[in-house]
Image 1: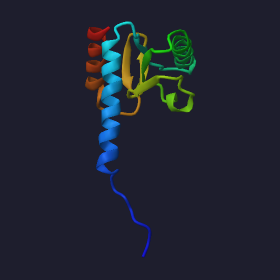
Image 2: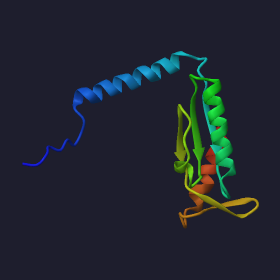
Image 3: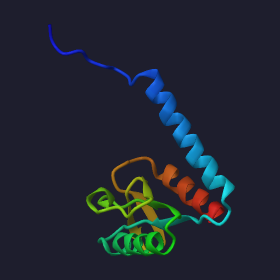
Image 4: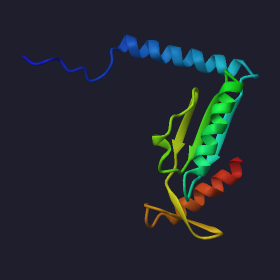
Length: 126
């Protein structure tokens, strides 16, 4: 008989993890002085912007030990870098700049409307 395969973690372990995550979120919400920082970097050429963004995240992480940082980026290389402590990231679709004032999907051919909607959403949030 082969080894047993566990498809999902035991319910008690899931409940403990969920409770711990909820307690962490509640503690963050209860502490208004805890900075929550969003950094946006949409590299279309080279790696300079994402490197600078990661350096900023590192400095903020060191200066504000309780801070929670989130990087939103379209860099195709974000996964190759060391991510600073208490920093997470959201990877957006890659874009190119066919002209100085326009962006187009790099790999999602035919989804230009999605990219336009994403930039409109970013404008409204920031």
